[in-house]
Length: 294
Image 1: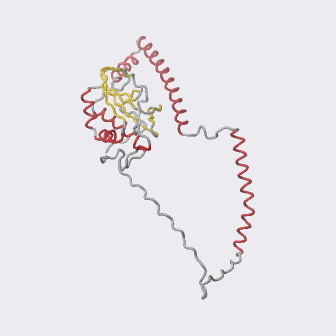
Image 2 (image 1 turned 180 degrees about the vertical axis):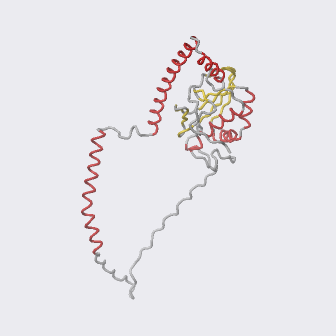
């Protein structure tokens, strides 16, 4: 198998394998000093327990019943609280993610309703000749397309990333199960390459994204603007097709991902869609965190 570049900065492709622990040797049996006739000498009787040892044993005899009583109380309290249910069933990470996704979906629906009401009130005020509203509406319309706040259609380059189909028993030498899944940096590499190639609009899965949209992964799931997705991950970019494809081919991080595609079977597909329609971006426009590159 050819040598591959690391997909994670600072993470070598070839991991050092732990050496097998040395076989424990049986300690030699110690015998008493030999007598002149060859027989073993008699063993010295055990020493009489010291007062400190005797006190320690007395404390343990007193503490043991107390510890067992407290443990029994805890078990009884847990049983009465649970009533046959799993007390930790809702505390796992998957449950928290699903609950958050439902909350985001509910809030997104609420935002859509409120935005519709705002648009209706704005149009009504403009129709009455409100000069301030009219001026603000014209300014907003001028930047709406740049900010991704309008629907767009045109030719698209679609890139699909997917986990490898190998099982844990089929791993080549030096490959771990972690290498068989699509990671955050893989999705981000494709997204950055497409922006660099002049993408005028972009979607990841079923959501419109803009330049400030964050791509995050937990395990092998993608979290995008509060929603959770499982692979395969589809990134679509609208713009000049040749420039977008050339940017993918030239990007060094995408090239590293393609090395893993050839070596261990990660999924990577690029196709052209002659015409597609993207919805308007509905997420937050403000930045909560940003770092100036140096």
